Image (cartoon, rainbow, N blue to C red):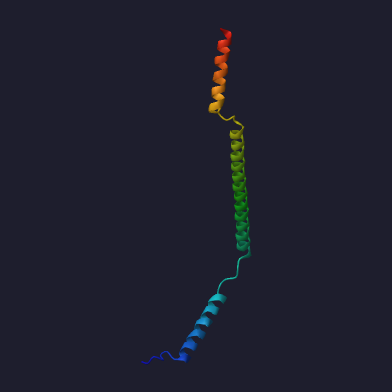
Length: 103
Protein backbone atom coordinates (compact mmCIF):
# COMPACT_ATOMS: atom_id res chain seq x y z
CA UNK A 1 0.00 0.00 0.00
CA UNK A 2 1.47 3.34 -0.99
CA UNK A 3 0.68 6.96 -0.31
CA UNK A 4 -0.96 7.19 -3.73
CA UNK A 5 -3.81 4.80 -2.83
CA UNK A 6 -6.51 5.40 -3.91
CA UNK A 7 -5.25 6.58 -7.25
CA UNK A 8 -6.41 9.71 -9.01
CA UNK A 9 -8.58 7.66 -11.38
CA UNK A 10 -10.24 5.93 -8.41
CA UNK A 11 -11.04 9.26 -6.77
CA UNK A 12 -12.48 10.68 -9.99
CA UNK A 13 -14.61 7.56 -10.43
CA UNK A 14 -15.86 7.72 -6.85
CA UNK A 15 -16.77 11.40 -7.26
CA UNK A 16 -18.63 10.71 -10.51
CA UNK A 17 -20.51 7.82 -8.94
CA UNK A 18 -21.48 9.93 -5.90
CA UNK A 19 -22.67 12.74 -8.16
CA UNK A 20 -24.73 10.27 -10.22
CA UNK A 21 -26.30 8.77 -7.07
CA UNK A 22 -27.18 12.23 -5.74
CA UNK A 23 -28.80 13.14 -9.04
CA UNK A 24 -30.82 9.90 -9.08
CA UNK A 25 -31.93 10.50 -5.51
CA UNK A 26 -33.06 13.99 -6.45
CA UNK A 27 -34.95 12.72 -9.48
CA UNK A 28 -36.65 9.99 -7.44
CA UNK A 29 -38.40 12.50 -5.17
CA UNK A 30 -42.15 12.69 -5.75
CA UNK A 31 -43.38 15.86 -7.46
CA UNK A 32 -44.55 18.66 -5.21
CA UNK A 33 -48.17 18.54 -4.20
CA UNK A 34 -49.53 21.93 -5.22
CA UNK A 35 -52.26 21.86 -2.59
CA UNK A 36 -49.72 21.21 0.19
CA UNK A 37 -47.48 23.92 -1.23
CA UNK A 38 -50.39 26.39 -1.23
CA UNK A 39 -51.20 25.45 2.39
CA UNK A 40 -47.59 26.04 3.44
CA UNK A 41 -47.54 29.40 1.68
CA UNK A 42 -50.83 30.38 3.35
CA UNK A 43 -49.48 29.32 6.75
CA UNK A 44 -46.30 31.34 6.14
CA UNK A 45 -48.35 34.41 5.14
CA UNK A 46 -50.49 33.99 8.26
CA UNK A 47 -47.39 33.78 10.48
CA UNK A 48 -45.92 36.88 8.86
CA UNK A 49 -49.20 38.77 9.36
CA UNK A 50 -49.35 37.74 13.02
CA UNK A 51 -45.72 38.74 13.51
CA UNK A 52 -46.42 42.14 11.94
CA UNK A 53 -49.45 42.64 14.19
CA UNK A 54 -47.44 41.62 17.25
CA UNK A 55 -44.65 44.00 16.27
CA UNK A 56 -47.11 46.85 15.75
CA UNK A 57 -48.73 46.17 19.14
CA UNK A 58 -45.34 46.11 20.81
CA UNK A 59 -44.39 49.43 19.22
CA UNK A 60 -47.71 50.95 20.28
CA UNK A 61 -47.18 49.75 23.86
CA UNK A 62 -43.67 51.19 23.91
CA UNK A 63 -44.97 54.51 22.58
CA UNK A 64 -47.76 54.55 25.19
CA UNK A 65 -45.23 53.87 27.94
CA UNK A 66 -43.03 56.66 26.63
CA UNK A 67 -46.02 59.05 26.51
CA UNK A 68 -47.03 58.09 30.06
CA UNK A 69 -43.49 58.69 31.24
CA UNK A 70 -43.46 62.14 29.62
CA UNK A 71 -46.87 62.95 31.14
CA UNK A 72 -45.64 61.89 34.59
CA UNK A 73 -42.55 64.04 34.18
CA UNK A 74 -44.71 67.02 33.16
CA UNK A 75 -47.03 66.43 36.13
CA UNK A 76 -44.06 66.22 38.43
CA UNK A 77 -42.73 69.49 37.03
CA UNK A 78 -46.16 71.13 37.55
CA UNK A 79 -46.12 70.38 41.31
CA UNK A 80 -44.82 73.45 43.13
CA UNK A 81 -41.43 73.08 44.70
CA UNK A 82 -41.29 73.08 48.50
CA UNK A 83 -40.58 76.50 49.98
CA UNK A 84 -36.97 77.43 50.57
CA UNK A 85 -35.55 78.27 53.97
CA UNK A 86 -35.78 81.99 53.22
CA UNK A 87 -39.44 81.69 52.17
CA UNK A 88 -40.30 79.77 55.36
CA UNK A 89 -38.53 82.38 57.46
CA UNK A 90 -40.38 85.21 55.69
CA UNK A 91 -43.74 83.49 56.27
CA UNK A 92 -42.91 82.91 59.95
CA UNK A 93 -41.89 86.55 60.37
CA UNK A 94 -45.13 87.68 58.71
CA UNK A 95 -47.18 85.58 61.14
CA UNK A 96 -45.21 86.94 64.07
CA UNK A 97 -45.73 90.51 62.89
CA UNK A 98 -49.48 89.86 62.44
CA UNK A 99 -49.69 88.51 66.01
CA UNK A 100 -47.88 91.57 67.36
CA UNK A 101 -50.19 93.87 65.41
CA UNK A 102 -53.27 92.23 66.95
CA UNK A 103 -52.12 92.84 70.55
